[in-house]
Length: 543
Image (tube, rainbow, N blue to C red; front, top):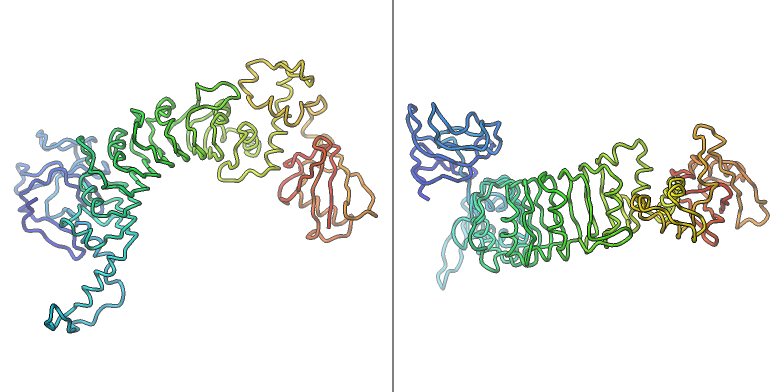
């Protein structure tokens, strides 16, 4: 590229004057902090001199669609996405090596100006000025392993072989929000960094090749690739990833992606895939990535997903889809039906789920009940919304769920007698785990299913026995306590009764329904109801 009469800024960035004569179409540029792509270079009558027509990344920054006085000079995707700018107002950026030197060299104390040093080259002593600075600079760059050049106006690799010579040990690069214009420029940089494991190219508007993939070995060590907000298509994703044989994490947020084909012989090593904020993805497209063999984490936040269904698996069965998926993120979607939560129980390996800000979770006034129902419906879940599910919480959630839908179960044909227990298909479809919970805890008894009047205190009181296993001289007492009473307040009451400091009290309980098992009441902020303490249970107090 022949760019005449450049103005070099202090930062090393190149600003062009009005005698620009080379082919700059497609180049990425920066103007007063805003990024754009050059779409036109030439004369715009009746205005004299040379103009660049640019299409802004932010369409609100422009004034027109590439037309002037009825003549179309270039086209924009947005009616206000274009502007004409004088070349001397445009920053074409700097090469990778210049940017890295600007940022990372000579950060320590400056050398004494004009300091002389005698060095030997061959057999001859030579006087040098500033030789220490050169050696020091080379040493600093060669040691670099992590490089951040975000928003440094990087436009390409620079001199051939210069990167490999100057900083061969780089393993991680952040090149987000720069002036790179094509994937080929990225390849030219990466091809010189044989140890590169992490590459972030977010917010670069790249042109991707339609031909053959880059040479084998270019991304041979790459494990993490971040391509957020770059306008890449799914076909281009597969094309670029085909030369990443050990890729483990792939981030593709906000690209307008449509999953158009199943990845065959590509993405086979990927463990984490982030497709957040790609609003064109639907449930059927997800089936195309359902057989990535090593996919453990799938992030689907804000894609507009309304439902989830695994048609290959019936009620109570496991799906063959997403066989390795352990962590699923569904935040900020449109999931509104419990049937989608039921479907997640079909996933073979799912242990963690994030499902916040969906109609299903936001419509309920009782967030704790919603959490309990999700836990009860997904049997293998260990973490929900980044909060670990303790054994006691799961037990309480499943017991409350079993009780909450007990009357519906009976009406549908459920019965305490196993020989008569035949709930209809409609109930089993709505509550696939209910039968297994009855096997685990026993079928709900009629006394549990009586509808209580919630606003009467007597209907919320629990009659409990209180024992002191370590104090044989203490008599067993009986107390009525509100089910909403926190463990902390229970300890306060017992402290006054027993005249023992609260800090020394340890509480647990046992239930006739779970003989031989003792459950610790370890969280002082939770209520008796949270731990599913019921009438007739026995509190055990130790100090």
